[in-house]
Amino acid sequence: MQKFSLMRSVFILLGIIPVSILFACVQKNNTKENIMNSNNDTLHTAANKSKEIATFGNGCFWCTEAVFQQLKGVSKVTSGYSGGHVANPTYEEVCAKTTGHAEAIQIIFDPAVISYDELLEVFWQTHDPTTLNRQGNDIGPQYRSVIFYHNELQKEKAEKYKAELDQSGAFANPIVTAIEPFKNFYAAEDYHQNYYRLNGKAPYCYFVIKPKLEKFEKVFKNKLKAH
Image 1 (cartoon, rainbow, N blue to C red):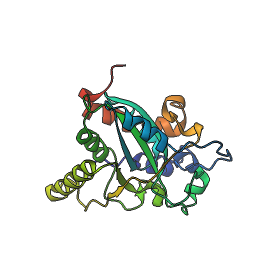
Image 2 (cartoon, rainbow, N blue to C red):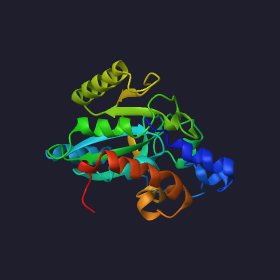
Image 3 (cartoon, rainbow, N blue to C red):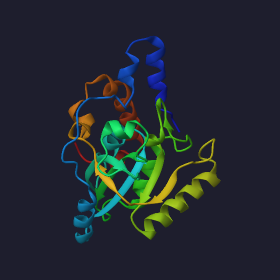
């Protein structure tokens, strides 16, 4: 498993980019207004028998959103906060590490086109599931590796896949990914949504997200949407 955080370390050592630019959790003073709890999306989707929902936390949601948006069968990816005890949290509150929330993405997908198993495959191959509360230079419980399952079948598949990966020795260290029942999801502020698509030339996107996407596209080229 490639650790994409290496790119950040290289640029920090060379002094090419200010360290603050390289961290996903860049503090901003934007306040969050009218935050949508996407439990409403969950209920709406549940009524639509052709679509299902998956919720993952696997590091900075700028990166994970950009990855899952490219998959055939995925109709919507929302960046947000999940798994904590604070209702309608702001980005600053989540970064303060007191809300219990993880940066997460909620995926609406068509299981006739892409299965939950395939989403799990992408999940585990596009981050490091062996580092506790950390992805590269992003450190804290909000960056934890976690699967929030929406039903017993998702739980069963996630646990089975995790056990098989551990037994196979796919990773040098044990997988620490938590598998937890879904309880809430709050959409992040507007400036976090579609971040890579709207800010592709920004330093973090260019030097961190873009290389990660290029590697992802090579491995999963048969699962990608046509451009």
